[in-house]
Image 1 (cartoon, each protein chain N blue to C red):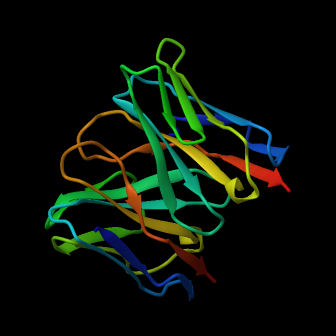
Image 2: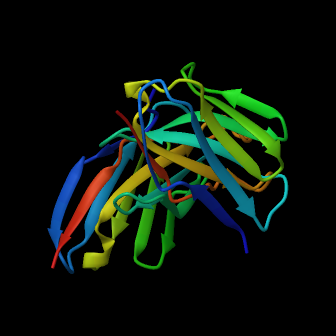
Length: 113
Length: 112
């Protein structure tokens, strides 16, 4: 069966520090991968999606970047964090065909101080 | 921008009662989905309804879709304390792999 792993679960980082959140998927090949951000009491905002290795599409211009170095690995990065980068970050995957059901990781609570 | 807007934003009912949440959206869709999120956790897919369907059931869940009104409802029957969570509708607007558009969610509290 397919599983998705996202870590760390919580992270406190100072302003100006770098960020690297990692997400891996097991049990499937060529998944579509997504990074979402959820602000407190808000819905999810799509940040990046990827349909294949090295293929990244950005939905919102911002201080973050994403990379997909391997088929089932998706990384969210920042060179210098801002206070406004605080939030709940969720990685998700969906099958490469057969519909748009998304399967989510458990999320990373990022607090920039 | 938000595609789906759920209402109410918050709903508190007694255990055993039915809970109804609504979602409105703005543009044409391929399908609409409902997800559940327990506090501080990831989202879990509940049910998908395609644009050519009007109603769908899954256990205690019933979803309706009215494309003429661009709205959907999620009914949870015989609610349980464990149903306490936030519920989000999500639309697949453009098809393909470019992500779902989520509403802000309804926070449901089931009082034991």
